[in-house]
Length: 255
Image 1 (cartoon, helix red, strand yellow):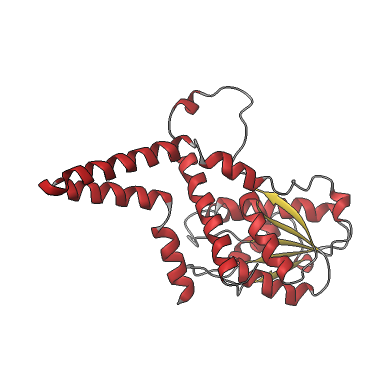
Image 2 (cartoon, helix red, strand yellow):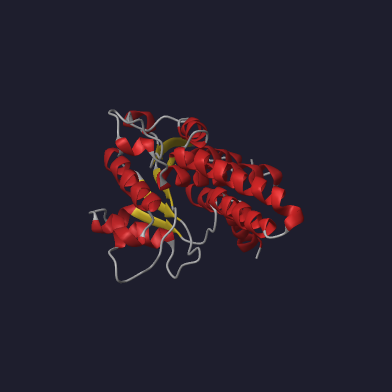
């Protein structure tokens, strides 16, 4: 129950929902003569927030800093002592009408592929996919493991953890599996900071392997940069989600 409440609150406080609330409240207040001025202020504030989020004028710079707290794992020998490549799930929607790559969220699919890339370069390591059935009929771990098998990873190299509902659960349950062995931790770059703190709190020895970067520098000018984009709004949502998660973890003494 606490998990569901936490998720609902995070959605309500998300940038896009807050902007919508400001607009609706503003419109309602405009219809009342005495509150018209306050309504106009709320609508203006909502428009400003939309412009800032749509153009990524503030959020992108902060998210870029968060994503680059740890470098990508390109020098594989750094992780030579790792016995596990742990891939954290990022969502899945079990819709039999579409391929498995579309059932997995973009984050889950990219993390899986990067986990396989790293696993192929390590000797004697195993792939551990983690993620429960969060608002879905199948677990994220099941979907990522199935994709790994379709991409040629043998069953003998795959372990799944499908009871966790959030990163806090994953850190605790994975510690029970890997014991004191070192792992390579694969998750989205924006999610890595919180994940590392939670896993280290559990005493897990790890090498970070961030992937699925949202903020990337264009090498050439693109006309799309002149306009607000849903990608920038998504980045603002991810940024808020991660800092809210960090605050919640600190409040509960998990990090």
